Image (cartoon, rainbow, N blue to C red):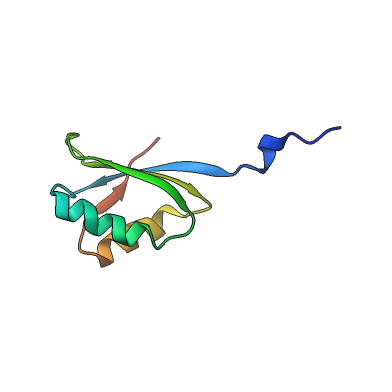
Amino acid sequence: MEKNIYDAISSEVLVFKTNVSADNEVEKVGDVLSKETNITKWTIDRNDIDKVLRIECDRLHPVAVIRLLADAGFQCEELPD
């Protein structure tokens, strides 16, 4: 049986509630997340009541993201699917 090329893709999307609201805070989060090599893309929807952070990543545990943001001074909690 031929192996599907998409079987090798293990990326996922993690979604978090945060307290990131100002431009300078988004920059600070970006500085933190850019150091994590498993993150391919991230966005923060500051217009959403939960200030939703979405992360496209490869094999990254949600607890790692929560700790990274907590160490940077932000609240972060994983949202259910």
